[in-house]
Image 1 (cartoon, helix red, strand yellow):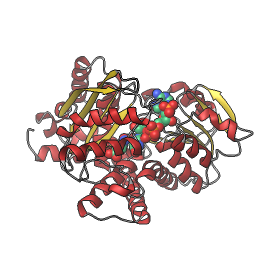
Image 2: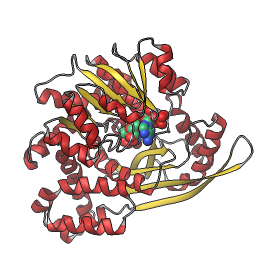
Image 3: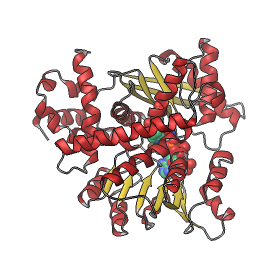
Image 4: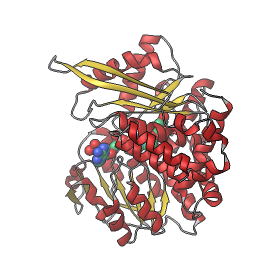
Length: 446
Ligand code: NDP
Ligand code: 2IT
């Protein structure tokens, strides 16, 4: 690490001591960037890193809403407008009780580099609330979404900031948020992505993150003379990303034997039946343990982390940050796992990533591997601007091309700058950062 990078990291740590997730994401990025700053000494003079690690703007607001008992509830709402050097802020909204500024800043930083890697003109942002949609009625979720948008609408717009879904925000929530935005502003514009197909959504957006992850993994395997065919796969989570990762990896010849939610995991040696999971999660909003009541011969195990004890060739963590630690990484490698593709944002701890890289596991980092979702969001924005819509096949073909392009950028940067040509972590950080850095330099001290 260069003296400049170490100084920036020290300053960041001193100023943000309680933001552990943010410091983790920033540390991983900064540790990769030494070769960039050796090549560009002018970046230090322009305090480029000091600027980059400070979000452009953080909006924090009260979200009051009335529950089904008539009681007023109060949540905290956020939007982190992280970086707009290469386009309007773009990134999801997360509704989960754990949401805080540290988590949203880490997600904003990752989003900025991820969006840069897509090659599309989108800056980075992230937002959400500590509201928990789990166990709430549709009426309560709508009341919350309407109140949340009643403040958020002032800060977003199709050319300024375009939110989308993330944990706890799917089609239902996007619909309520969009309805309220339209009602307040009178504008029928592409201000949110992940919209329903009847009001401006794009075919293929629902599938895009999970499918994109599998396209990245396929490119990575092919480059290294391997294939998905006949592999055994474990996927954590059973939400949007996990479900469509299952669908695509199965089409590619993999067999998914385990999936989870925050309570535990199911194991099905004959292959997890995706129709059952879709029915449970997309329709009934039920717990994953219910799977064993529908599919004889399957097993439920309490504790979501234990999924990494399952023997597999390919592990796809698709639930949440820091769900896979050093101990889990050692268990996976001991069981023969040779590919890890991050569908969630920062699911692996720094120790786990380091272990995978040292052991020669092919490791696909989140900001590259899960970029298919936001890339397809950008395609939705294009379709909205054109007042036009593309077929599923057109969108999917574009997505495949984008994921190939992202893989190649990571591989080229790794080849040029990293210790090993397969260090896609360094590759993704460097390739993602370079474009943002050049744009920031060109735009002066802003
Ligand atoms: P969903 O809300 O659809 O699903 C989240 C899944 O993860 C659920 O199965 C949930 O279980 C589980 N989960 C959430 N929190 C925890 C936790 N603390 N511990 C264990 N499991 C947990 O979200 P998505 O599928 O959209 O998002 C999953 C991940 O992918 C997130 O990291 C998100 O940031 C990332 N991502 C999403 C994109 C998208 O397009 N949706 C794009 C790129 C990345 P439970 O129901 O029990 O809470
Ligand atoms: O983490 C992510 O990339 C997302 N949640 C998707 C963001 C988007 O704007 O589609």
